[in-house]
Image (cartoon, rainbow, N blue to C red):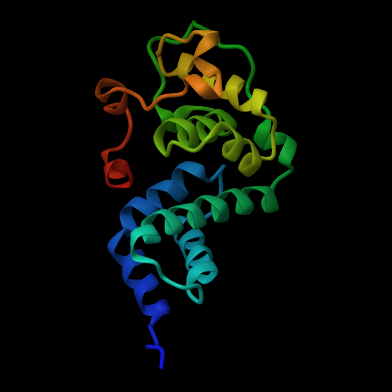
Length: 178
């Protein structure tokens, strides 16, 4: 006899407990319009009937929110607009830009790679672009944010988690996902 588990209730509890972090992920990854709450509902609907595995619950919920936000963006606007960067960096602006001010494609690539630590390949697949485009967008984002960037920083084998000083530029809400 197997024990029946209330997977939906466990997912609901996780989404309630992690609501602010998951909503922040949705907000960062939304292009322009859309409600983070709508994204959370979509992600929850995707998971509610799936088995709940405690060690992977947070990661599964986070991935569902990422996928729902990106799918929402692509369903509401031409995909070429989303993946197009605003082009070369102009250094006329005074000071670095915050993550939220970056063009969407750069923000998404940087956020997935440097904050959530997705691989270059996973990031490319989620965004529907090439690995080289992910590297380029990440480089542009880092430049806009005021980080020193070297071309050699973008090979998959050399990608490392940022130092504590670099992470301080990101939301502390994601510390629980490391």
